[in-house]
Image 1 (cartoon, helix red, strand yellow):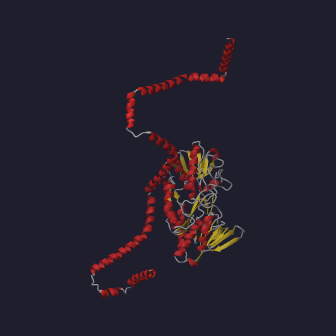
Image 2 (image 1 turned 135 degrees about the vertical axis):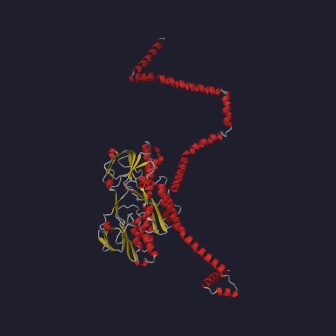
Image 3 (image 1 turned 180 degrees about the horizontal axis):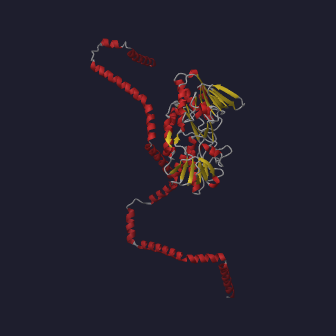
Length: 397
Length: 187
């Protein structure tokens, strides 16, 4: 069995597959020399889960066999990484194999910590406790929303980085729109409990979303961090991050965004910074200490939103800089912190937020993207999945 | 004469001194070892030069190639174009790269049955409501046609007066009346 590769990519998610595809397109000599280590049998297009939870998409459209997305010429090692030894250019797996590399790309994603909110793990998928962040339970979100007729609908955002920071409020907007459509909105109190200080980081979109919240009469409570759910009594306990006091909210349905952190095998490794994320240069995406290592995607310590759109811009930078390094040429590609969040504000409306490291809008469309538009909703629902499966994962977009 | 001898001895002494340096001695030795190769290279170069000279003096060959080249539209414009093309090559490569990506993206979609199915289902969800409306209208017209053919009736002025009492006819006439009123106001 081959245990030495020119490039080892840890993680077969959006970032890992995109980089592998791009490397293979750029240099055919890498055929059979790129290993992707990932134990998962399935690959998911997670942005679709918002629409699944809102009853506007089928969850099975978001799932594909991992083998079907592995680029031709890459070697898939169906194993889980346990540790790294970057000084020896080695990656160790749980089954005891050691792989060596010339170049390493760490694309291990982000880990969901279902146990961090007391009572969540046990209650999830039952008693009107739902979350779009679980493929297994995403259908239950729609079931809960569909059957909800009156009471308090509570939506939360935790005090940790999350993948797709807009998702916690997207499902709230879809639910609110659904309540309107079936004429039960007047019986329902919609509350958004968020650990963030505002509805959105970027001023332009924040102002637009504040108007949406006001128009929809949603009770937004910021700096509130969910720490416990008492599912039997339907009580959510929040910590006020400014005062430290505990506040209870009685709910009738709750959509929870769980805590997330860097995967354990990364945060305990020599590649991690003090917060556990892969410590990379924010422009070149090269590791700050180990020059033959790159970090990309959710597991990197980049000061920007963790989204698939961000990876779309990071992947060409990593691929081209790695090839340059391989050819002993200077690395010329830089990443400007671009990230995007298509914020669904209803079943036919969407604000397309695009921004960079400076939290300044970087808009692709020739119109004001802070306006809710049905064309952008159409793009998210119908075009982006196609671009993902057949463009991004093939290394062409 | 004596001065000239002294000067020559000095030059000779300098040469000997240089030759005595170990690095010079090493270089000379390596050069001597490489002499056969150098000789071969010079011979090859000589052959090329001889061949060039021969071609230049061979009028027949030159005429033949002149005739051959003259059948093509190659001129100073072509040479200018080649230089311009070379100048634009970096940009052209970028464009070709983008085009290649677009073609590969299109090919990937066409080969991806799951994507095609997903897109078709989405399109169907948009067109379903229109298709349904079309079906209902078609059904209505078919029924009307069937009824008219099965039960031919004699229509007179009284039948038409009777029609006007029908709510759907009243509704349509109401629209006509409103339109006439607005037109009258505008005039």
